[in-house]
Image 1 (cartoon, one colour):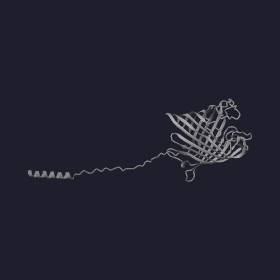
Image 2 (cartoon, helix red, strand yellow):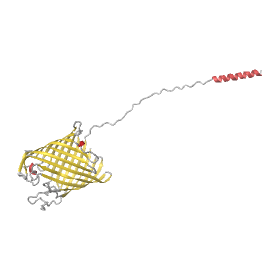
Image 3 (cartoon, helix red, strand yellow):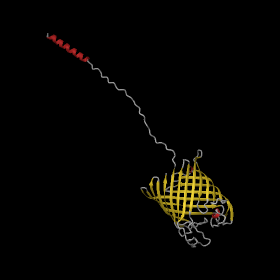
Image 4 (spheres, helix red, strand yellow):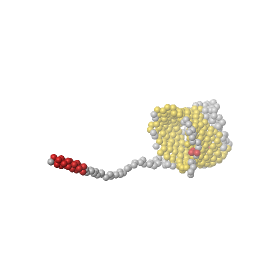
Length: 385
């Protein structure tokens, strides 16, 4: 009986173990949610390309010229009074003393190809009772430019220029000129020491006439050369040549009034050197040394038109073309101290105090030994837009 119970117990134990092995938990199935890719619209903001906007600058300046050193005495030692009474035969070698000049100048780039430059100078006598002062009137100059661009595949830029000027002195001589300006600057010297920013050859036609619009006119054809070079240490150099063949409406007096001609060839040269050296700077304020000087100008005339003057009553354009020499020149140097204050990035005020040292007495291009100082001060502002 006992064996039977043991057998039954063992059987039940084996059966339970077999049943336990057969019980396997069912796997848990986890359903993954489907992945949805949602593309969002991306907005890219780009700076809008701006078209051409008119731009330029305006410069307004007041300038004072003082009395030239030794103005009451000519270079031969002859005295002359305040009213300009001189010993017969002596010239008033610098009549422009103690006067002021207001200058408005600027440039407007109207389109990508068109620009207008203007310069208006008004002179005023500061001592109305002093006959030595002969600088007065308004000098107006306007220049219109049209940039044609490069010629073909070259680096030569062609610009047309129309020039008008009314000098505002004496008989208010006016002039109208057209130039075709070919700029070869990109073919010229450009390195670490010399940078040529302008080298222009310009064939031209100019018409000059008096205020009365009579037959007293001057037709001119010619060729100009203008150049500008930037140099190291704040220096720059400007060189210009003006060649003109004159065809006068009336015969002009030359050679001391002994010759009358209706044609003449002239060649004028300008050569200037400029320098600005900064001496002190603090924030928007700067103080520097300013210098300019050179030939202003050197002139050659096929007919003798320089030197001793002979004024003919029926001759207007010839009043300054009746000397006894065929060359004339004037040299000068103008040092000064310049102060600048940059009020805003587009607005600057400035002032310069200096003196001009010039060979005022030279009249025949053969001597430069007589020099005199004339003090000058100018101040103004420049704004860009």
